Length: 270
Image 1 (cartoon, one colour):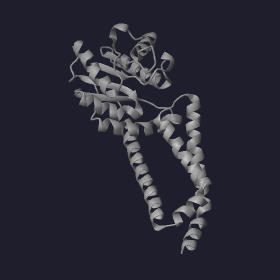
Image 2 (tube, rainbow, N blue to C red):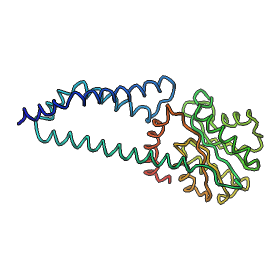
Image 3 (cartoon, rainbow, N blue to C red):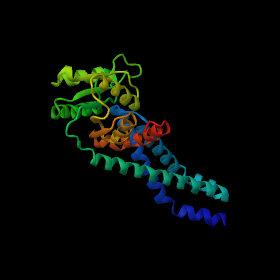
Image 4 (cartoon, rainbow, N blue to C red):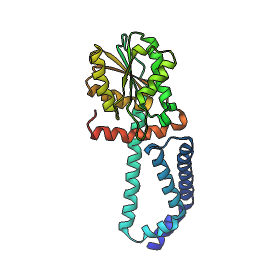
């Protein structure tokens, strides 16, 4: 019986090994390519780890087949592991669908925005990253559309950095023509929840009520969570505009956001 089971597993092994090797090479290559261009976070690292596991499994396929054929319990563990992985992939796919739907609904509907909050996204070497520049450009366009709205640049001091993100953002906007007296610098926050809470306090000091129309500008993948956190912070009329994420980075960023959304839910940030 064990011989038949082992033979059966080996019969389908070639195409499975090839599939695992191709998937592993693709995922690991994606991680290496992104690391060489600069971005490195959990959404970049996890596909690489999965890819390395796929390559290792392809390489040691026969040894693994012998291991799992040794007992019914091992075969059950093997199937349970793949089932759990498939269920996880299904939840990731569902989350990606929600992000995509949220992007499609992200066009501003406010007719008299009182404030625009632009969220930071990292300033390596105290210079705005491409992701941050995309957010700032989107915020600049909105500032021109609503010339009476306050513009809040929200971001604190990055780890081991001397600069504050809000200052880098403000410098970029003023260099591109935004009047300095329209800017509010929120330079203490270290999370999206703090972005919203601290920005609300500063806006109230300028006479902007939490019930007034607000536009949140962030990356497209972050938009859904940012709007929920803004509502939790007390803003009543929240509209979102998402800066487009480059295609080469898009799904890695969405994967990172998947875990960030879980973390925010656990921490009750929305």
